[in-house]
Length: 108
Image 1 (tube, rainbow, N blue to C red):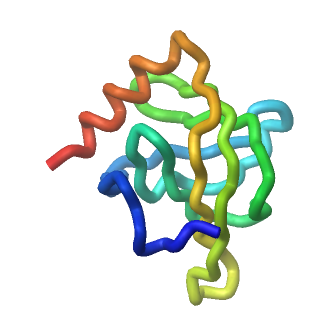
Image 2: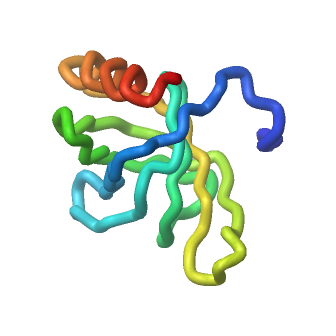
Image 3: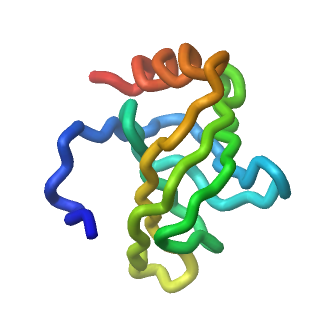
């Protein structure tokens, strides 16, 4: 299991609304909280640890289609939502540039 405090890459806080949907069903899973080139964190519900998801990140630039693994989940303390940490497994080649542009938006 990955420890939350031992991260190789700094996470960039997402300051714009980026919705995260299941690509095949369209189900809204949550909103992007932070991101980097290897993974991201979502606040939402209906996600399960150790599961692989085909996802659509709905950004203002363009949608990003990817496959990601949910590595961990944690309660937010609100009782109605969870935090979920994901690792990118695959990003559609034409969406890779959009991901890099999105990450640059949130760099200090």
